[in-house]
Length: 265
Image (cartoon, rainbow, N blue to C red; front, side):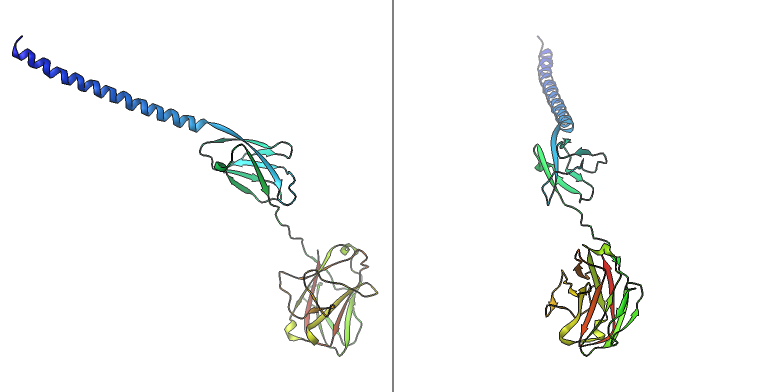
């Protein structure tokens, strides 16, 4: 064989070896890409089930509500004897629970295995205040002067009282029984009260002391002088034997346009 032929064979061997290495590398890369794609598809479509129970946070009793994944709009119903069976996929982040009159709750999915119990907190409902008219008012002392305020449930009281004086309000609705009387006092700084004793509230003809539930009394009888916060009136639970009459007594006071506003709830 000539020298030229030998040279051609020697040059061909490295080329074939290089081509084989490239093919192997391409096959490996393709296999890796395919494996990655398959893994991603498996993760994307893998599903696991979680049972979700809803309970009242205060009573620990089961309640009904809807359970959602993240921001989904169509939830799965959960009832006390049949929890919601929700399907969770990789990438889902939160379980959301909603129920009427309860706050919405969010729970991270990554902390849940197979079962989840969500404590639901009730939304606080503030009872509506109903104005209580002073139309049936009547002073039982000539030291007291009463005029109507900005509305029928507001009065303005003035007068110089050496001993005890006041007024009564009759004809109040019997529906107040078992409810709460709410009183607001303002412009108290313009008046003077003996020993901070502002007013004593009684009910029925035999003048039974009506005690507030959210403040203490001076000498065990009188409200302490001072304006009432606009968001926190003085509350008096009304007994079941209430017959529609309230009595307001002042002692040793100089009243100068004391404003009283009344509601019940």
